[in-house]
Image 1 (spheres, rainbow, N blue to C red):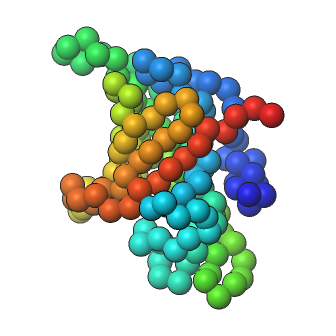
Image 2 (cartoon, helix red, strand yellow):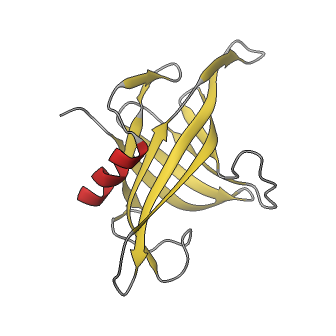
Length: 156
């Protein structure tokens, strides 16, 4: 857990609610499980032989708009951070990437193709989001892969 806290310090986490849709979402969420396994865990998303030891999603910005039905949509950037280490031991590495998101009607979509990149296979994290947690599923080319459960970074 101290590794995730270090990652949080590096990405500028706060526990203040940020208005991002019909409900308030906190500005940051800690990763707690991948496919119902608690961290640390090996995932298919990271290179073979790498263990995921921590993760964080932090909202960086948000712009409110409305669709043709009048539903509120918030879009902006999130910073996705992961802490990984070699399976055999060794130094941990913090990996960070800023990604576009869209939040509407309680569903969060994070496009895993970085802005300005030309990705060949569509990939996203998608699922329900509220003040307490994010339950996101990694989808590649429309096929569900791993599930990621994040919990809100609440104030002490």
